[in-house]
Amino acid sequence: MSKERLLSVSGLKKYFEISQGMFKPKIVVKAVDDVSFDIYKGETFALVGESGCGKSTTGRTILKLTEPTAGEVLFKEQNIAKLSYETMRKLRSQMQMVFQDPYASLNPKKTIQQILMEPLNVHKKFEPHERLNKIIDILKVVGLSEAHLHRYPHEFSGGQRQRIGIARAVILNPDFIVADEPVSALDVSVQSQVINLMLEIQKKLQLTYLFISHDLSVIQHMTDRVAVMYLGRIVEIANTEELFASPKHPYTQALLSAVPISHPKEKRERIVLEGDVPSPANPPSGCTFHPRCRFASDICKQIAPSAVAFSDTHMATCHLYNLEGEKK
Amino acid sequence: MTTKSEVNVVKGSTRRKSLRITNFFKKLLGNWSGFVGFVIIFLLIIISIFGKQIAPYDPMYTDFTKKLLPPLTEGHLLGTDQLGRDVLSRIIVGARVSVIIGLVTVLVAGTFGTIVGIISGYFRGWIDVVLMRIVDVQLSFPFILLVLVVSAITGTGLRNIIISLAIGGWVIFARVIRSEVLAIREKEFITACVATGVKRSHILFKHILPNLITPIIILGSLQIATYIIAEASISFLGFGVQPPAPAWGNMLSEGKDYIFSSWWLITFPGIAILITALGVNLFGDWLRDTLDPEFVE
Image (cartoon, rainbow over all chains, first blue to last red; front, side):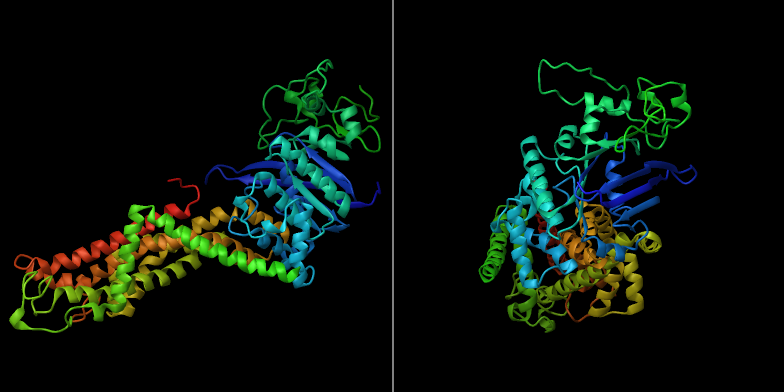
């Protein structure tokens, strides 16, 4: 894998203010709190975590579908966090998104041809008379055909709709795609189809993916590197194999222990987390994971841990380890 | 390849359109109240276009020898009024006023209200606050009172009635369309447009507006009945269509003096208003149910 950096996120924050009424103070929900990572060209980078941990918000903020509260997003070394709608609009042909819900992300009043024609018209890609052929080509790539051009989204199944969503994202030949839980709304047999399609297209077009998911088996199957998020922060980043082989953060360990084992005789310690995810409006002091952590000590309640590097590619934020990456 | 698929495009779209129209009538025939409403509206439009030809007598012709004849006498199906004019002919010719007022007012009020609703809902911020407070203020007045005040200023005549009804009626459209826009702009497919890089104006006109057509049609069809009744009310009060020109409202107004001796003078125009309002409402109700994909019969 080449090590050319495509996207760099540093200190990204997204806070939502919730008004409680005229005389009460506003609640600040720290959906994304100081998140930093790099994504290299051609790789698939995963964001994983429970629902509500801020992984979708991170993906949307990177594409400026919501405005970041603070932080930098460098795309091809250009800071896009502060760009206006109009300048950003032109850049969007290089960065696209696949949405979670294939039922909500396609305009019900438009035919498939209109849906796929739009990105080409907006960015004036190809000659006008070539565009229809290009659409037919891309429909074939995602396993649909010319016969589907004049149908409306409601005439398709969930899996087909998601493939239309993928077609819309790749038709502009972008460099970078944010896939926000693209398969979580689909049933398992269709999931593998869509995932394999995404991998196939990635090879063909040399795409870079930011893959957001809570499904660890999907992540193990298709990603190169993983960042684990908890309550708006990244608690561990590593190469996928490294992470699955030796998870360092207690939260990652608990997550991985929940993956079903394929062999009935294989035994593994099952770590069950107690309680719910705390509200991001009122996160716990110190390490935000301490109320649910089985190794929590006094220091965890008071001081937020800093990142510990275990290798060039593996980092975690936990007080269990000293700065050299050894267990205390 | 290109030409072949282009031919397919054309064929596909026309076939789809004709399919949709036959589907529309199939659905209409399957629903009793919707069908009745449709027939009433259809007849009303025919009558308002060919009123002068259909009417058995000249609606303005006065004959004092034949005044206040009860229904079914001397060839007057619905009787004659205090000036000997044929009531049936006056109702038929007066239908045009009601239809014109219903349709034109809904166009004017609907267009203006929709524009305000879209601006308010899409851009939010201070402009939303300002526009919606204006709407609030206007909604706190009774509709008919406001129309009366405006028509007292603008004066009588068809054009001025339409203006005053539209001034009274646009707020409903603004409110309803604003809330629709608020719902649609949060939908994921609008976010998908932003992610694709679609221009803001394009999102508004090509993506939000088509999704508003259903609520606009439904609200419009229901408002038409309100406007027809309101026109009758202000004509009854003397601000609307001026005699001797026939309109249902001023027929009621003139007939009220004879309410105890000649009941037919106010009964038949009243029934005409009732049937019209009923027909438009039945059709509007049916339209709402049919255009809502989540509604299951």
